[in-house]
Length: 231
Image (cartoon, rainbow, N blue to C red):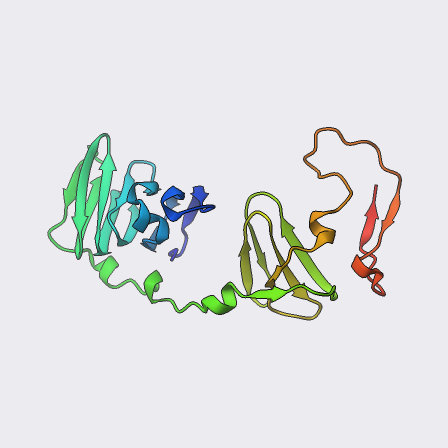
């Protein structure tokens, strides 16, 4: 959960095999966040880190709050344990404790009391947010071409969302569909051939030969499905 006026960057996020081989490294640029350990951290805690300009936060099977303030980086652990690391030094912050890396002198300090800003935080803890996983990861059987928007991912990750606020996260060789007039995109299987077996060259191919101007007709030659002109 990101707090207001927070800048957060995913630097190395990989989950393509067993959880122990995954990685989650993110950078908190400004503001604050609330985080809870996932599968990667439970399988290999060393592969999960949150970094700031001055510190690295390591996890020990953890739920934590992190804030960047003018005088330092503050960490509050509400489940498990976490660690503030800087310049080869480490401060372990156990459950219901808080610690800080001071800007002045780079001092690591375990606080006697938890700052009120942590205890009064109104942003939800991520482990208390209700998520409909069946809807989030639902798969629609792709048997026939229906009017709508189709998205297929070859490399990287894409967040495919609708104007109504529903979304699905897609990784390599995954596809999703948003029906014409619909509000909720859904994953589809098997992968549509017109997305992944397209005869046209990929935009990242090194050698692209000139193509004549053609009209790109929608899949199945559906009425009114001409999409664009490609050259």
